[in-house]
Image 1 (spheres, one colour):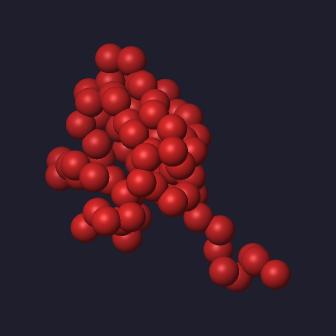
Image 2: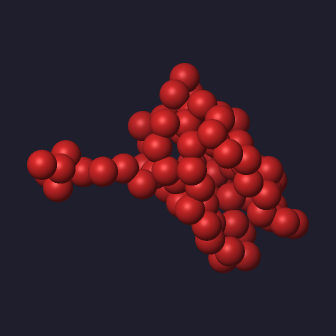
Length: 75
């Protein structure tokens, strides 16, 4: 399983991926410009907002999936 160190931070090489795996359970959303859905290895899921820090207790990893507004649905 390939992991990302910087996830969806604006300067990350992984910012355009459809999902990222982050090792451990400490997630920072500082430097991220959009909401992200986080799901840990035990299935616990939460919506994470830019600028905040999140803890997934005892998680081995967290899968991040971006929540972006589709340009098709914006008016």
